[in-house]
Image (cartoon, rainbow, N blue to C red; front, side):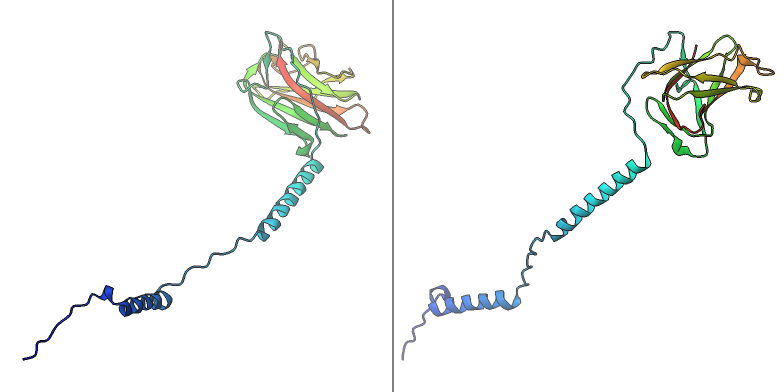
Length: 227
């Protein structure tokens, strides 16, 4: 009886199998693996368009802003308020500040002053106070800086009963020329104010208008102080 020899061959030792295995792996990677995502090349065309566009918009916005508004450079100055003075610009005193004009652009309120462009017609500031003040025993000081042309100021005071001197306002001519702020006294007790209780004044309205109507004035108001 013939004997049969059986040989066990390891696949790893068979060179033909190793090549076939490698070929199958290549086929698998080629036809069955998901395609690799192609990396997009970075383009800078959008940046070259967006940056100049933003610059043009910024320049246009600045040009419109400067064309609409007028600016002045004002040195910081102290008002030298008296020790017994009370600022009507204070939050504790002022309830509301109103502008009386047809064109609101004539008045600009900044942190330290109010800038007024004074045309031919009158414009006014109205101070509505939280509590009544006594203008019979005291008076007001208006800290003002203006152009060289003369300026007229008319003052109307209204009491808690809504009586006022609107028919006979206090008119003050301001002709002083100065590069700094001047103090304009407003003394209502010396005028003939009828039916108005100066001890209980709740509202003060100050009108500004030029003496020479053909010229446009400007004014800076730093403060309004009760003495």
